[in-house]
Length: 153
Image 1: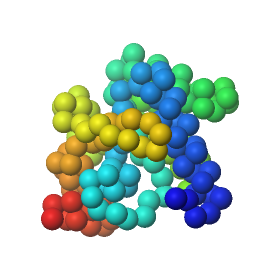
Image 2: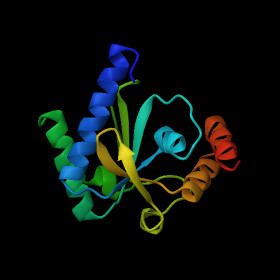
Image 3: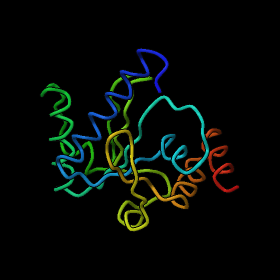
């Protein structure tokens, strides 16, 4: 349960984005801190990280979903995602990172190993445990290495 108005707003925004992605049929997986929590290591996180398929069709869906959530204010060219980049929306604790490329993981390969479960009121796909560990090891930042070690226990 959120403890502050900021946390409540963050969860509402996260729910909105996930609902829009689901409505538009976006192929995506929850990664980062929320995936770490899903896989059993409870820790704080300041953002929602989403990994999206880079295909032109999926990117068009991503853009439509983000356009819907932003009320038409967010104008993103498809290249932001098709060229393996991403977009950062908002600031912690209301930050959402939408990424089309992550360290050590190919989306299409990982898609077959994804896990589906709840995220708030929505059903979402999470990056599978072994892929999350591989991603955390490949990223190599201190928090990522701690996460990988905890997930390997």
